[in-house]
Length: 138
Ligand code: CMP
Image (tube, rainbow, N blue to C red; front, side, top):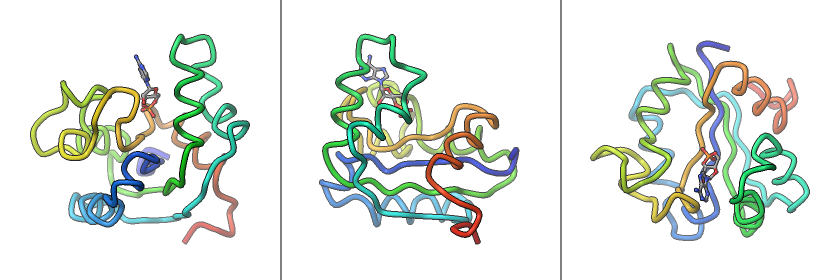
């Protein structure tokens, strides 16, 4: 999976109408979309996805936010996908994100930060498998 990563356009960004611009930004950055879906997670599904963070103080807030509206989930392909995509989206906290990154352009806060990107090849596979079967990847 070193050429694949997983992303979600989060409920804040979809609600503000940024979905199209963010998808264009991703394509313009050289990523191919291998799988994509528009879904509204239940709290249980969001809790499972972010289970790795369940001991963190922000877990409840994160689960409630991620199940508050629709998201776009996608698998993206490019050489060095995980690290290149993290550069494209910028720091977790948009206040620290570099100019021109997706979070600098579209995110409001560390909690509502517009977009997710996998932090390792291993997590890219786990997260992609959470959302997509083999029949949904092209
Ligand atoms: P993401 O990359 O999706 O992975 C975990 C998420 O937890 C992260 O983006 C943030 O949205 C959220 N997060 C991380 N730190 C905090 C924090 N201090 N307060 C609220 N949410 C946080």
